[in-house]
Length: 82
Image (cartoon, rainbow, N blue to C red; front, side):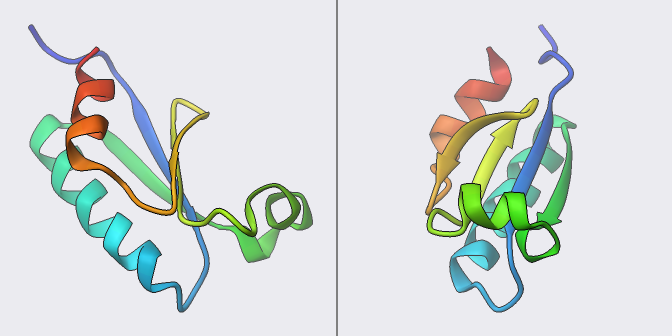
């Protein structure tokens, strides 16, 4: 059974080493599962900075917050396979 079409969004900012770690996990999982993903720089939006500034990196799946600070690969895979 193929996974549903999902979109992952990684919210981060330049110079964030946790964002680099999260990006590596998301790239790997998204590539293996054929899921699209994008990255959004929270410094480009005051609203994003207020909402997520203390939590980055933040992972959204289909626009809904999934994780923050770290991306758990197994949890991400499970959410994308549901």
